[in-house]
Image 1: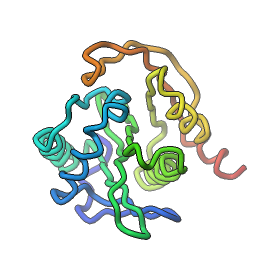
Image 2: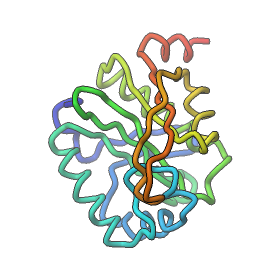
Image 3: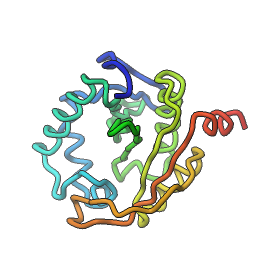
Image 4: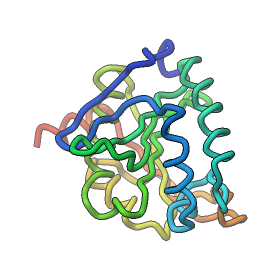
Length: 188
């Protein structure tokens, strides 16, 4: 468990983004952005093709997980127009908290991934008092690896991780970030 169940109106802000709970209104947009194979192939549990029913299943699963205090899942919305552009979240499994995220392809390369992840890490370390957070990225997704490295994550191991969209296991670089390392990086 990460913490007791979060407030349903839990929101975080960055310079350009509002991170808020995922809502049922987001599901068509999630389905549209996740339908792009280039997005789905970088995630372990996203199927391809991805349809509205998949977004509904995601929403039901993560709503239950959030209610139990095992996850904090945020929709990423641009402040200037409210557009849903992706998601970021913290998920506890077997005592380990992992950060996972994705952005719709039209929003790649604009710094949104780093900006949102930094804010979610601040929330995890400062508000939830987590001592460490892990993350993984497939070896053939160097952009995600660059985001994690910029934030201070360090490599721990390479594992084989299932990728539902690809229908196979993929080499995944696992990384870790401690609260102390994150605070040092923020202060620098």
